[in-house]
Image 1 (cartoon, rainbow, N blue to C red):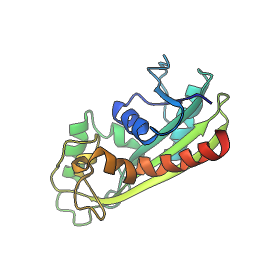
Image 2: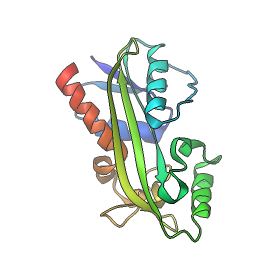
Image 3: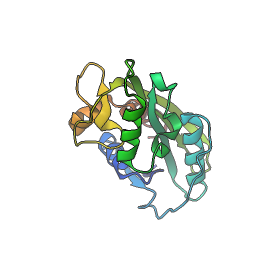
Length: 194
């Protein structure tokens, strides 16, 4: 196995995946770099289902092993919203943050977690490994920080007292939901595929 296609068009996710997998002896390429332009309808009801749908759809148009994730923010007081709709909660990243903060106006319980489901499939779409990573925290009342993307500026990580966007890339890439899921995938790759 010489390379993995990571099924995303999100440059922030791609950067994180590359950083976390930088010591692996394989190339990690984006869909764009693999010349794949497929619109995948993520119509699952869970992060896990969407990750599988995405991975298998991309595997159908490439001869490479494919890694896909579906991730998002689940806020306790909002019954788990935005959840699997995190990327479509509003039109723009800033609008999504604004909507979230507005929906939590005068709400005392601000507990939340980031969830990342990852699926690794072979070139035929067969599932090789599925993993879940979570990162717990709470939603800030105002946004802070310029690192990261998505909801990072309003997610205060438990035990750190700062938002994910206030953290260094190195720290974030050791404690995030994506790092947690990916570390399990990497362990599988090293033990089963290399």
